[in-house]
Length: 171
Figure (cartoon, rainbow, N blue to C red):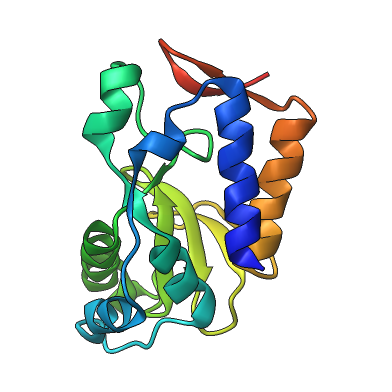
């Protein structure tokens, strides 16, 4: 279950002293998630609905009150974007890059920075690392639960740590 995997990830952040748990925004109803994606003319898959039902991204203000010089980042370097920002980013990238075949309507940028991040392909549930300029495109997992469990394993093996001054960091 995705929700259980997400809770395990938050537990790992708790152990590391990360403010992730307190930064999570309240989750949304499935109807709200579907309505947000209607503007893109795409139906969110069950994992995206479950993700945003669990939490509507992170609140940057709460995170920065604890770690002022870092971004809210459950994944090293990439924030868990609230649904409105996710849909706005997807719409912008679809408008700018879609005509060139560099962005698909079904891509949902859930862990994103300015120009790169992790997207869920809502057509088949796979998770990809993608740069907006399409220089890098790599399949990371078959689904969001597998991706999150991989992050949990990385935290447990010591791949990441939390630094108040710099946020989530690789070892």
